[in-house]
Length: 90
Image 1 (cartoon, rainbow, N blue to C red):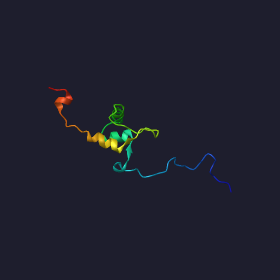
Image 2 (cartoon, rainbow, N blue to C red):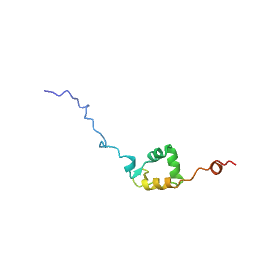
Image 3 (cartoon, rainbow, N blue to C red):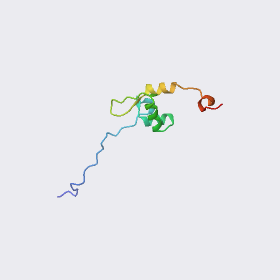
Image 4 (cartoon, rainbow, N blue to C red):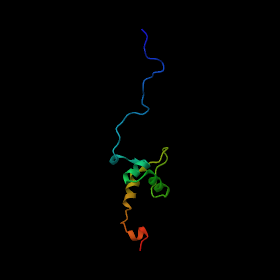
């Protein structure tokens, strides 16, 4: 009896192991896009923070990852909004 499956048809395999995503509260590090999403901004904004040295990412693993400690210290540097000094008004 001959199989009806040709040599062109192969089993579908996944390149990565399917796993549950880790919630943001439990993450040790974030990508630039994830950091931007936490702050309600665009990924471009996150990269600008990195290039301006306001955020120090980990880059030894082949991609930029922002440690949770950097996110926490970035958010701790909050400044009260003052439209006179920030906006340049009189």
